[in-house]
Image (cartoon, rainbow over all chains, first blue to last red; front, top):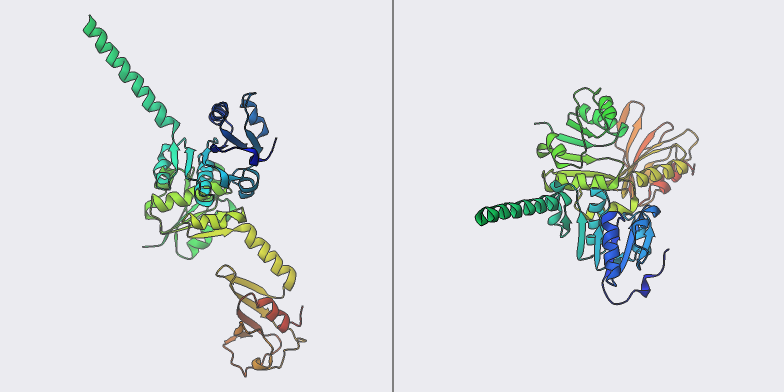
Length: 156
Length: 222
């Protein structure tokens, strides 16, 4: 499965850590758009979620291990790093390693717990929190419905 | 007010460290995420135990992290220890944070992320094993300042060639001094003309990794 990254062309090189539903989905989308994608997961089985037409690379390994990141993943060449494993603390340490050690400017980490978010914003790491996003979306749907109700009442 | 110490994670390590800190007069709180471990920890007198995940801000808050002087993260996961120390530092303004790391390659990275003290168990243990293998239980070594300086306790046996010699007659490496001689019940700070006797216990202070050479000189290479 492992091959050389040197083949990759001129566009952005995106490293995704964690091949769960979100990671795999993102990898498939970027691959379809002809992006250079590398996915790392500690479980080989996780790569089943990638679509058959996925054209990126996969590495089985521990992405908190400097050797895996440096030699196998060629992390220093990455433009974007996305940490989306199912463990907040692992996402945090990977994001910080990417940002501080490999000097990658665009680093995104998923955090399930929004309480930790404030600490990482100042490190220059973008965080996304599913709970907060869902809450906002639900609020948006509800407010839209309320607006529709008002509209309907006006119609009457 | 007593110095407040917060220990996060670690089973037996946390317990023995907590006991030793309480004896030294610190106020100690332990956070552990396993209920059974908490029960065991709670057997300790004067120890406050909190059951919860120490990487969560509200658990740290419950443990009084706002008033803590020293936080020590000793879970088995490096990423958890990093997050604990960063939360303690950034959110609760703990003065000193200490993290245990399993992976020696992460030590520098942890320092870079602002953790005050990083302890790598593997490096420490391999260091001790190396010393033990070389000096064959003849001397005890205490490394300080990350091993740049060490204090060694060297017993002098009756047949050692240095017995009866004055200190200035012994060919010690340049970066080593004999700081103290323990003779029976007395402790003496030696001078150049102090004679070494059989049964003496010498306390060496050495820098620049010269302790092994000095110990070999004093114990005839054993």
